[in-house]
Every structure is written in C-alpha cells, then in structure tokens.
Length: 488
Ligand code: NAD
Image: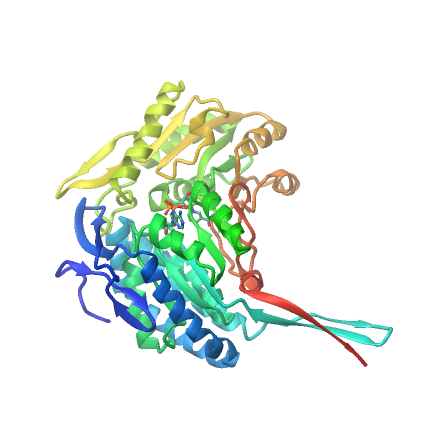
C-alpha cells in the first residue's frame, strides 16, 4: 500500500468479505465527505442484509479452522498485521485526517500508533492468559476451558475510527472468533485501507469481514443475524439501547461502550500550569469529539477567575484550521449535521442563561470555505442541572462552574445519566482518594488525562455502557467458559 496517494482520484470503497474486496450486492453507494473541505471525496458501499449474509457465511466457514489454530500461529499473523500498520503510518494518518477532519499530527501521534498497539496487545495477551482450576478434597478437580464464541459482530463510531475499530476486532480475532465488522459510515476510509493490509498480512479468508454502510441497514443486519453470537459496540447511548434490545431477542452477549458527559474537577491546590495545559487537551482534543473529553469543568472558587482568564488566554492561540497545517490544534468537526448540532447547543446554553466567554461560532477557513470548522467554546453561568450540562454535546464546547466543597462538586459531577470518565486535579492525596471513590464513573484520572494502559478495565457506568473492555476482560467477552469436573 505504501506510497500510493489517496489524494489523486475519487476512491470507491469496497467491502472485505471472505478475504476479497467486493462491491455491495445491490451495487448501491453512499457519498463520503472530507469534512475539512465540505466535499464528497469517496463512495462507500450502502450494504444491506444480503451483504451481511455473505459476510456471516464466510465467517462461519472460517471459524472451525481459525478457532483451532494454535495461539502461537494466530499471534504471529496478528503481529504481522500490527507491523504493517506501523509501516503504513503516514498513509493511514493522512486518510484518518481527511476522512474525519482531525489534525494529521494527532492521527500520526495517537490514532494510528494505537491501532497497531491494540492488535499487538491482544496478539500477545493470548500467549499469557491462564484458565482457572479448582481442586476439591472429596476427590474431584475442576478446570475451565475457554471456547471462542463463534461469529461475532463489532460496530464502531467515527470519532477515533481505526483506533476503536481495532480495539474491538483485535481481541475477537485473537481469542479465536471470526468477525463481521462495521466501521462508521461517516469515516470508513481507514477500515478500507486496513482490509488491504489484512490481505497483505495473510489473515485467512473469512476470519475478518468488513461490511460498510448505514447503522440502520448493515449494522442492524449484523445485530439481528441469528448466527452472530455477540455484539461489541461503541457509539451513542441511544444506539446502544436499540442494539441491547435487539440483541436480547437472540440472547447475544453485548459489550456496550456509550456516551459520556465527563466532569473535570479542579481543586485550588492543584499544579496549575500542568492542569491548564492538560485541560486544554481534555477539553478540545479531536475537536472535543472524544468520549472521554471533560466537557463539564468544575473549579474551586478561590481559583475560578484565574482559571477562566488563563483558559481564555490560551485559546487565543489555539489554532483552528486545515488538518494538514503544522500549526493546527483543532481541525474540522466530522460532518455538517454534527457541526449544526454542536452550534445548536451553544444557542441552547445562551437560552438557558449561559454567557459565552470564548468562541461559539462556525469558522470560515481560507481555502477551505465549505469545511465544518468551529471555534473552541467556553461557557459560564449555567446551572449544573440544565440541558447543556446534562446532555452529551460531543464537540469543542466546555462549561465552567465554580464550587466550594467536595460534597457540592460530587453532587454536580454525579448528576448526569452518564458515568464514563472523570478527571480530578489536586495535590492532596487524601482528597484524591476520597473523591475518586465517590465519583460515579468507570474511569478516574487524577492529575492526568487519557493515560491508557491497555491492561486496565475500560468502560462506563450508568448510561455510559455495559461491561468492560481492556486486558483479559476483552478476551473473556469473546469466549465461553466451560467447567470440566473430573473425579480422581
Ligand atoms: P452512533 O451510535 O451513531 O454510531 C456508532 C456505530 O453504530 C456506527 O457504525 C453506526 O453506523 C452504527 N449504528 C447506528 N445505528 C445502528 C443500529 N440501529 N444497529 C446497528 N448499528 C448501528 O455513534 P457515533 O455518532 O458514530 O459516535 C459518537 C458516539 O460514540 C458518542 O456518543 C460517543 O460518546 C460515543 N463513543 C463512546 C466511546 C466509549 O468508549 N464509551 C468511544 C467513542 C465514542
């Protein structure tokens, strides 16, 4: 794949089924936009149930051989795939920036390296996990066999396209399952390039099948298919509910990683400079389109004014622009619909009595006038219970709220339907422990943000999800334990 430029011609993306790149059965395609230009630049299969049927058939046929393949061999093939991602870093990062609107530098530093790390992590994890055994004094011994489930479905969102796509499929394939996967229709390009790398790496045919298309068609067909044993889904809470209900009809296992409205809690005793620079990232990285971004910032009263002024000052030089410019800190939002949704929340915040301290508007970038750019936006003066502070915006918008006591800020932080991630800034160790313990959240970062050790449990509480990914937990999800009890 190396050195073939993506920028030359309109690309027609194809499905990857049974080891081959194929057109959708009904020959229908959807437009795919480059959000930084606001232009259609590729076509994506509008796959239907008949495409999913083909993919499930291929995955079913591949399962017996793949699931019986020695772990060592599965591991070697997957490590080869991880290496190929590294070798094609630049091309994949270009594709991600073009498809999603994110800065190229971010895709190069985070998205693509993490995609290969995901695959390498699970490819090697299978070599190290052990199963339990229990001995009984009465003369019996039990041991556990972990059987891969069979054909599983993986469905991923647009915000971290290849990063989250591989986070789902890597443990599935490594554990011996075969997969029918659907990337977001909004950002299909890196999954398409990835399917070419799978061919190059020698992934046996049918082990991974990638079907492109809309959630309501291709996605729904995966979730409804009787031969699909489990669904690993990352996306919005509303979609997660639909998938959970549908999967229950056929008792499919589900792992649901959903939305968030994460608190960033800043105590007056924090390391101010470190907090400020990290808060800039945790608020606006990837245009605020990371499920882990801290969109509700709570600041202890003695430093409220200092923080507010310092954040606004920093944003004056926080460059928004073309994803491929070196100075760009924020690129384009992923689509015009999404941009309008985010701008709608700024209007709502004003209706709810908020004051926009910085930003709030769509931006026109010279040379990319139709791109979906927006200013980083800071709002204050809102009640913690208002819609702006309760609903997921998923864009470059943060609200500032002062607080006086730990009890008060915990009430604010825990007030939403979500519980994905929280950040706490304090130099007081006891307070860090107390607050972390009381936060209703799957993940708490103290004096840091988005530090990820792939062995740790990842997921949310409340309406942020069901189940945990990461480490051996992800391998457990894709396997069925069987207890064997032997009398001796
Ligand atoms: P989305 O729910 O609209 O779509 C996610 C995926 O689901 C896409 O591939 C889509 O085509 C598919 N889909 C949609 N409807 C479906 C259906 N009925 N059946 C099957 N599949 C269907 O989410 P999005 O807009 O792509 O992503 C943004 C959301 O994802 C935000 O809410 C964000 O917080 C969340 N997210 C969560 C995490 C996490 O780890 N918890 C990570 C990233 C993003």
